[in-house]
Figure 1 (cartoon, rainbow, N blue to C red):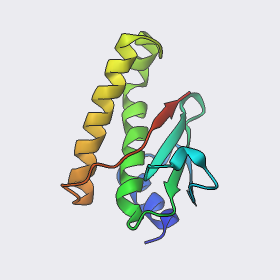
Figure 2: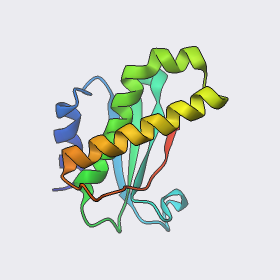
Figure 3: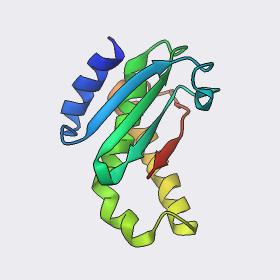
Figure 4: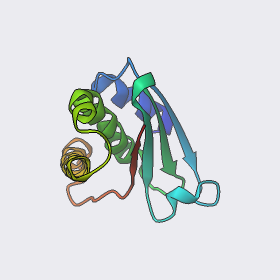
Length: 125
């Protein structure tokens, strides 16, 4: 499955069609943020836009797409909460930790990679 096919499939499953999501498969040389990671997502919440980056060294793209889209889903559903606590300080750090834990567990369930522990980062703006 290509990255674009996985994006289309899981964006529909997660009911994220109201988000404009782009996906790129790039090497660590092209994107230094991917060094040591399978992928990451940059979120632009106000515009409901996201850019997903997948490391070209990744063997199975679909689980990475699932993981990154789950970050979009969490943000989409917790946007009001995030706005109330702000993006600086301990409360937001706790939200990020809990959000990442939730996304990792859900990713394992959806992808069938129960031993998986995808590495990546998330950036909200």
